[in-house]
Amino acid sequence: MKNIIIFGAPGSGKGTYSDEIVARYEMGHISTGDVLRAEIKNGTELGKTAKGYIDQGQLLPDSLMIDILAKTYDALPKGKGVIFDGFPRTIAQAEALKQMLAERGDDMGVMVELIVDEDTLLKRLLNRAIEQGRADDNEETIKKRFAVYHSQTEPLAEWFQKEGIRHTFTWKGSKEQMLSEIFAFLDKQ
Ligand code: ATP
Ligand code: MG
Image (cartoon, rainbow, N blue to C red; front, top):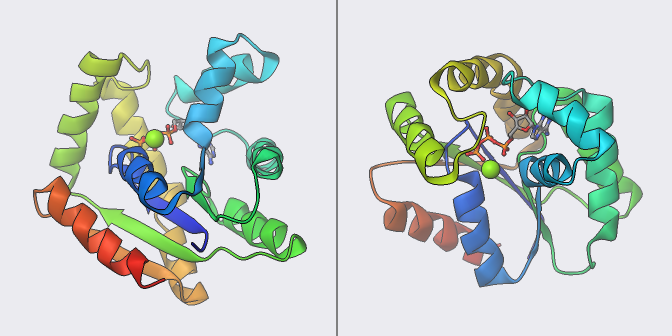
């Protein structure tokens, strides 16, 4: 399988669909949010830095994230394709990802964009707060994450469009339907 960039707002299902895609195509998976939460859990210096940003609903600095991404990517077994979940989130990160992959004789593959209305996103994130207890899933921080998404991350969709690899999937109320549309597309890649 080609590399896949899964893209969408907080709560759009990037992690959920990534797990399904990984199981079907036996790919590698990099979730930058999961990497950072593991660092926080382990009480590392990076974790302490990350917590400050995450609890505020802000993005970590690009230079730091690009470094983390490259290290995580290089530690994965090669040859199967990787799904990038939660990265890139800014144009600078996207440029860096493209360059990092090119330096390794690889490319970004395809971008899968998840479009979900904001009412649904909010409900999901508040529900996740109850189920998983993520510190950044409270209403105040969620609102900040949406604002950051709209100002810093959403413009990237156009960037992927220009790269010719943007593929959009819209939530119509059913996970099964969303997944079957995504699989139908990825099966052809
Ligand atoms: P979901 O996983 O439900 O789509 P999300 O996108 O808000 O929600 P994560 O991807 O887990 O959640 O990220 C959680 C937080 O980690 C972000 O709000 C941000 O502070 C930080 N983070 C994760 N990835 C990056 C990144 N590429 N650049 C900067 N900060 C990041
Ligand atoms: Mg996630």
